[in-house]
Image 1: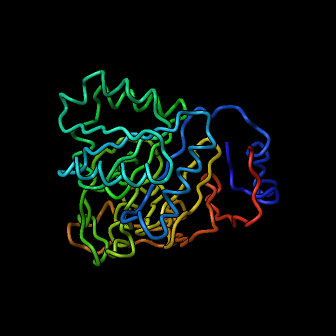
Image 2 (image 1 turned 90 degrees about the vertical axis):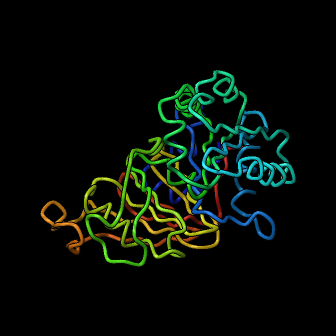
Length: 300
């Protein structure tokens, strides 16, 4: 499997197994896109995904889950055309629009033949409310543990964490009631993800979540930007044209989240913020940014 760390970076982190270990991973990678990824002019994120798929020993096949979208067939056709043009042999439509459908074993069985599963944008609450706890959800968890690449854009990004942002005030100061969260699908349990981040001024609402959940990593992803997350090796890498904001609550020394009343501004001291772009990564255990050098090592 391909890893984009340089030898020097790997030695710095003590992660030489990234380069030496060719065993199949026990959990698949995540590709989390902040929304509005370029599909035509410079579609770097999707092209990198396709190249990654071609380097695995899986079938050249992607499934498109359109549950988040009310225009499911249009959403599928859009990505079908894009991925076919990029060299994917088969693009499957998983147009699951009810819990009854999500409990049909035919959908669950379809995951066995895929290299990647792509969740489109729309409403993330539709994903969790229609898929959560179903046969499809269980099959997804099993396939993910066996190395399935799970990809999501916009709403498909938000649903990946255990704590999922449903809605919240934008361009506003953080308050305890500034954001509403529910349980996501939990593919990345120690993070909370917000999308369209800089474009919609969502730092305040991400800080509001961190004030109440300081143990998780706050991840704000801009449009046409993504993070490739490898939980096995405890790192992520930034792809795309804009930035990723990582808000670390471990260092918080004071907060009034428990005592504040609705509408009262939150107090947060010593929050750590990293703003990273393409060419940088982040080590999830040490919570430290990493410079990804141009000269990379590949396990071909």
